[in-house]
Length: 361
Image 1: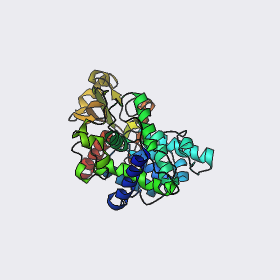
Image 2: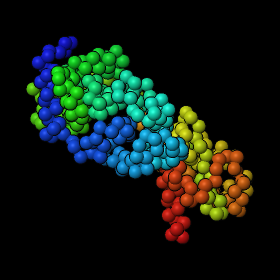
Image 3: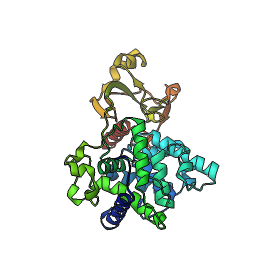
Image 4: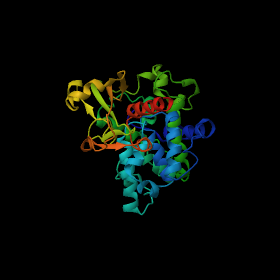
């Protein structure tokens, strides 16, 4: 479909708005607000992360950082600590940088246009549009995964969305479908939420519930009888695999040695056990007479978006309480210190298990 009639666009927008008001989601903790800070925070957290997972993290973030000023003024380590386990840690680093930019450039007040929001760290075109539409009623289209799927199916858009030019075409068509007229600004928050809700509740990637869809009569994919054919995307990232050996060093007083990972790289910016590409490299990092003290922990796999990490932890307790040992490699942190830091999920899990075993012992 190359052009959209006014009647088609009006029917589509009206149907989405009416459905959202009657059947969409209304109980999410970041809904029923036009506070751009809360909407922005939820949008960043929801990128490639399920709603059920985000709920708890969002609540803890709002409790600790109730506004952009408190987030901007916090140490990055504390922000990463609260984010720990949510994954995609570049989001947390950009979140912190963005909060600081809003304070420095705009006096702590979010800009109201998608165009300005998109200039801030970590805010892409769709996130900027979501904040501007939900909070300020700007007539601008979102293009998150849910909205993209709904649009491609309704429009019968079968061009390859792995190509940037085709995505731009879909953006232009999405703009043609936005609410128009005197009440457009009032409708935009409902319409935008409705596009998200349709994709999350009805127009699912697999087994879409076409019988419950408010725009079924307008949908080209439903008419074709094969809605799962859309959207088209040919490029698929290949999964890779990496093996890492983790040196879990513990002092006689119970402190653990953690190093901050370089950027870029695996777990960039997070605090972690020293990592090695092989067991032999790990062994070379320790005095020979300590090799017999090493305790091999069960190896396990940790799944990242496009990479499987095969992790091999080796634990050693130092023969004395000299915290100067290996200080050049990182920081010795007591049991009450490391939980506050940004830690990769598997490292945090190992440390928690170790603490639990110590308390039982």
